[in-house]
Amino acid sequence: MQSDTLNDAMCVIKNASLSGKSQCEIKPASKLIGRVLSVLKDHGYIGDFELVDDGKAGVYRVKLMGAINDCGVIKPRSSVKAVDIEKYESRYLPAQDFGVLIFTTTDGVVSQKRAKELGIGGKLLAYVY
Image 1 (spheres, rainbow, N blue to C red):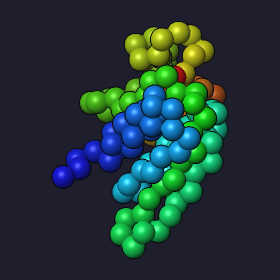
Image 2: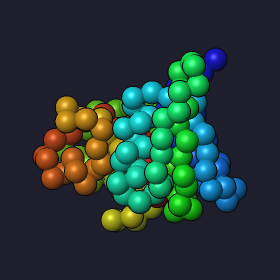
Image 3: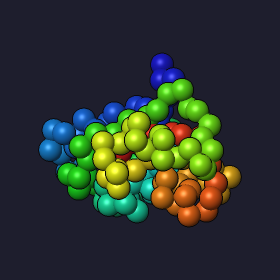
């Protein structure tokens, strides 16, 4: 039984990237995973991805770029104010301006850079560097 599909998806991406594979399949697919993949694609950590209908929940096929050193989800998913984003950056990312924190906000799933630009906080979902 899968209890956290986002955690499973990040583990699949991390393991495939560390083993040198050029693509991986994430199942089951969900809207949240698709939005997180969009943020990863925007920041150049993965290539294209597509949703393939398998008759069940669907599968994401993700092309890997080999740019991921580590990624994972953050539990518990704590609420973060806009002024506290830098505190969480120093906690989860190895260096300043290196890596991405992924938040879910009222404007959708965004990176910490976009959340700072908008001046909004949200729930902390994942990190990648």
